[in-house]
Length: 245
Image (cartoon, rainbow, N blue to C red; front, side, top):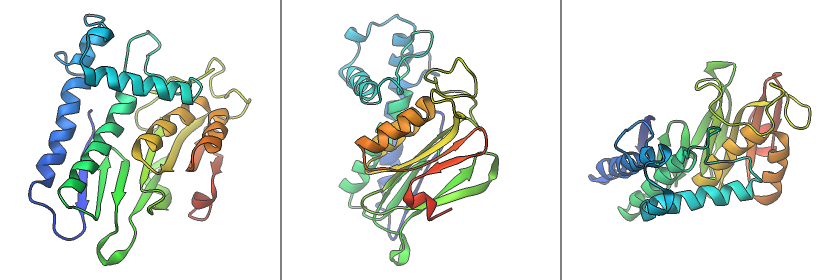
């Protein structure tokens, strides 16, 4: 997945927890990484392996991505502009979610798992304080724009942006450059807090791609907290983020 993973556990950590979490990420990376020439995802992307002949796990991930494409009205997509399949938009979230399930099965209750800035939390920090996730400023990566305090309703926070990785997201209706479908400035960074990491991660990407149209759609369909920064220096934020800025 090409991303760093950190695990913070409040109190004692089950001895096998770090290795178990690493195994989850390694297993999915081995199958779905497009940077590994021997991976199943690479074979599918190169059209050497048809999707219908791929593994059950690959087809399940593909079906999940296609469902999100439908739910976001095309703002989230598993196909690159050249038509090749790229499931990275769901695989990192899937790895985080599975790692969280592994931690729970090992008896860990209070922890924070961070994979490339996408965060899933459980319980609280030492002393009972809630987990707090910082959101970087898209114009200054050394500074924080705001922070989000996680709780049982919103334990997952994900950010999608172009400051560090460039235009890696395939935008909807991007022919006019920095202008989105409603004529406003395109989003350059979107952070979403949700009840699960898959929803947070996918919708952060979808809103970045689809702009304000997709933001409004997402807020109508899911209980979310969102802050979105645009290319003109403006921000759109829901209540939890407005009170934090």
